[in-house]
Length: 89
Image (cartoon, rainbow, N blue to C red; front, top):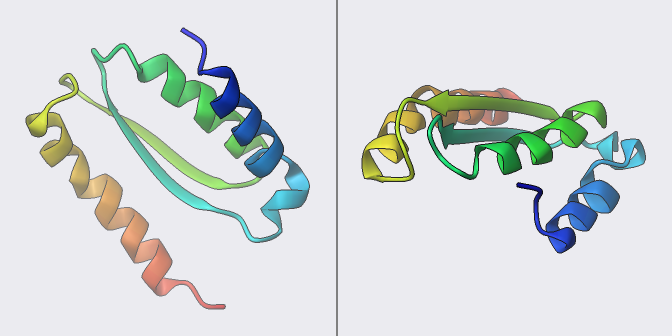
C-alpha cells in the first residue's frame, strides 16, 4: 500500500531533497512486523536515507498495540536520544 499522496509529496519535497539535509534529521522508526503499515514506513524511510538523513528503522515481532510500542522504545528511542544528546551544534 502506497503512502497517501499528501504524505508522499511532503516527504519527497520537504525532507527527501538533498538540499534539505544541510542539517540532517535523526529519525527512529519502529513498526510491528505484522502491521499493515510496515510498507508505508519503508516508503518514508527510503527517500530520507537517500537524502542523507540518519534513519534507523526497526521491526518488532508484534502488531500495532501497547506491547509492541513498549518493546520498541528500547533500543530505538534510547539510541536516538543518546545520539541527540551527544550531538554538538
